[in-house]
Amino acid sequence: MNLFLSKVYAQVDGVVSPTIPFTPPGSITPTTAGPTTAVVGPSISLTSDETTLEVGTTSKIQVVIDTQLQPISQYSIQILFSPEFLRVVDFDDSTDSIEIDFRDTFFDSTINEVSQQQGIITISAENPAGSSSITSRVVAEIQVEALKAGFAEVSIGRENSNLLTSGSADILQNTTTVEFVIGGGGGTGPTIVIPSTSINPNVTVLPSSNIPLPSQTPDTAITDNLRAPAALILGVILISMGSYFIKLRNTNESKKN
Image 1 (spheres, helix red, strand yellow):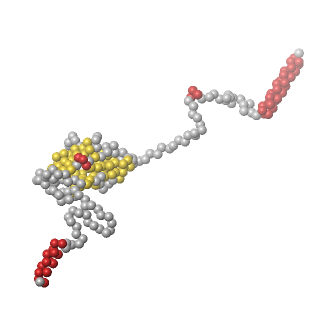
Image 2 (cartoon, rainbow, N blue to C red; image 1 turned 60 degrees about the horizontal axis):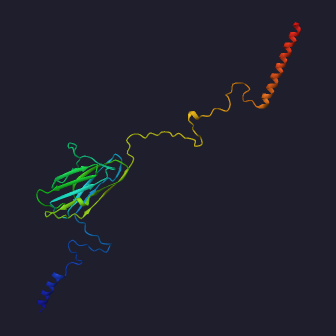
Image 3 (tube, rainbow, N blue to C red; image 1 turned 90 degrees about the vertical axis):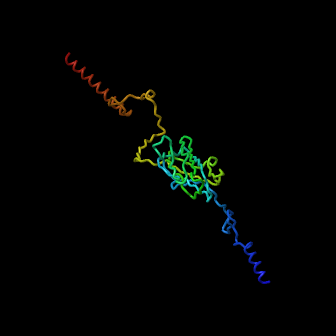
């Protein structure tokens, strides 16, 4: 009897007594430290070490794919940017079109195009060997140059991006965005300081044709600008001298006669 009960207990323990707490594969792991977070699925991420730029400086953006161990046979990525604030630096000057640095050695690139006017980057690739998973691999790198001060965003166009399995099922779940803050500095030459000219706001500048004539003539004689008493005294002196000369002339004429 004891032997029979031991076998029953052993069978029950192997079926209904898993490790506690039990977490089925792919579910959310419970925690007592705070709210739970969902497991991140297959993703296409944009990352950059330098997100604060000055006008004329450049930064590199990495395009990272992680399929979470799920095999895919091809992928397509559309990247959107603002051509007013950013310019994509051409990776290959030998071609007529603008391209970025495609770095995935396991997939073959089928499309590598940049439209600077529309602000669109298009990447497509497929696996010639069939299907394989991608784990946090940098598949491409984009070099951008800051053109104008302001705020610029580089994002994934979700509707035109996918991670396709061999059965053409899209497993892409998450994408990320890179944001740039662009300053207006970055000048290479010395700063030239021009001295400011202060203007009296109470002074009205008139054109030459409207300049009023002076109210008095310029100084031309000794008596100009003399005060009234001084002018009166000088007038008396001049009259006295005139009378003296007249008398002197009359005396001389009398002697002659």
